[in-house]
Length: 335
Image (tube, rainbow, N blue to C red):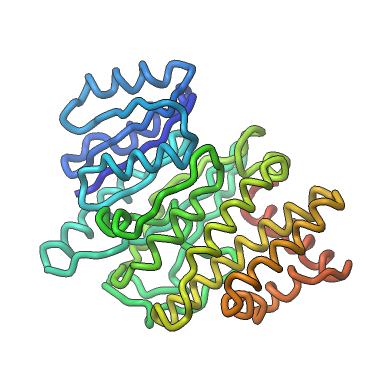
């Protein structure tokens, strides 16, 4: 029923926890992708396969980055549905059991889903308060729905990769190929296939546990600033992918614009936080390219208050955005 792909690079300290959280379900195939690790990841993965060869497989490949590892997992998956689990994260087993039951129920009823949405939890090291991203205000629970039943998302809500269980053949038919040696490709993964989603369901369970807090983690602010080129590469891919408004259902287009807006905001904030004149110029270039390539999407992104503020060149506009950024960091437990 489900392939859980675990992209793994130098994950010797975490891989066993990730696999343990999803093994032992007859309906689940665990597919570890060892992305050219230089530590004990490959040996640990091989040992896990030997312990349960019926349900666990491993792909060893030369290092291709997170995107290259996910690409290999998509190509090698045998399950009808697909879940990406980063090696330093884990899934809640009771929530996974409920998700599997729901997928099987819809298949038995002749209503196979394109997408099953579940909640994800920010597991911040040393924090007793765990921020949970839920979607009950956006979509009805426990029934098959389409895009015309979707309400507007808050700014902290979008269908991040952690929230998604996608139909495998839909992901493949979408033509998704993630760029190699690039961080933040989860934005592309949770954008491109969603364009083809027509039937989905929201299961209100806290499934994905997103481990954050390491200094070297990709979502660390200084790391993001140092990799701003990769953020911009991901944003450009999303701009290229967004369809024209008349090519998809209206509520789907509204959601895609919302997600693109959030990514543009993240890129803009990191360019501003860097403090360099070069990156201030790149901020203006980002918005100019969106306007040139996809003028309808540019207008839609700018219609929103956040879109207007973030694209401003004035210092008051920047101050408002930076204040909002710091509040969001505190709420989600990054600080």
